[in-house]
Length: 275
Image 1 (cartoon, rainbow, N blue to C red):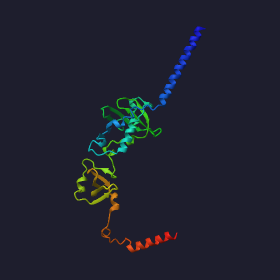
Image 2 (cartoon, rainbow, N blue to C red):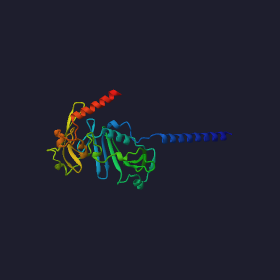
Image 3 (tube, helix red, strand yellow):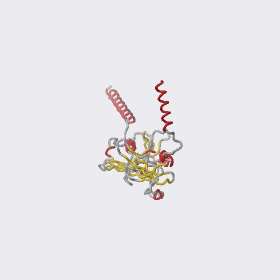
Image 4 (spheres, helix red, strand yellow):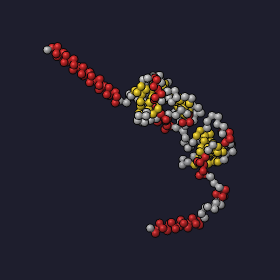
C-alpha cells in the first residue's frame, strides 16, 4: 500500500513537472523574445550597413545624425524607423542552424546586409539581415553576425535598410539625387553663372535662393540653400517657373485684358447676389 502511494505521488509530481514545462514553452513561444534592448535607441550613436562593396556609415554628432562621408544630415524619420526595426529583431522562431543553407534566406555573401551599431557607451552589436520571407511576405530572415542560427522576425523591412549614404540623406528640398564622387557632369553645370534663380519666402520670414546651373542628364545641379552642398533636382521641377520673353515683359497675348477680367468678376458677383 505504501509503495502504491509513493508511486502515485511520483506520478503526480512528474505530471506537474511536465505541465509546468509545457506551460513554460507555450509562454516562451508567445512572448516577443526581442534579441536586443528595444529601449536603447536613444543611446545609439553609430550605424554601419555593408552589402558586398557598398557601405553606408552614419554618425550621431551633437544630437543629429549625419552621413560619415560628407556630414550631410540624415532623414530623421527614416533613421528612427530603421533603428526600431533593428532593435525589434526577434529570436523566438529559428528556421535553420545549417550554414550551408544561408543562401536560402538571403544571408549569404551575395544578398546579406551586415549591420553594426554602437551605443554612446561603446557597446557594439552586429546582425545580418536577409531577404523577406516568401511564406508570408511580412517577415524577414536574420541572424547574429557570429552565429549560424537563422531566425524569422515580423516585418518586411530589408529593403528599408540602405547600403548607400544617399539612401539615408534628408531630402527636405525635394532633392531627387546627390552628386556622387567623381561626377563628370558637375564641372559642366557652371553654377558660377546660374541658368535659373528661384527665391523662396517662408511664412517664418526666412528667404532662400535656389540657383541652378545647366540641365545635364535630366537634372539641374543646384546649391542646397540650407547647407550649400551641391545636389540634383529633376529638371521638370523648374517647369512651372519658366517664362517667355512676352510674359516677362507683360506682353503675353494669351493674357486676359484687365477690363475683361473685371467684367467677368462683376458678372460672377452679380450671380452670387442674385442667388
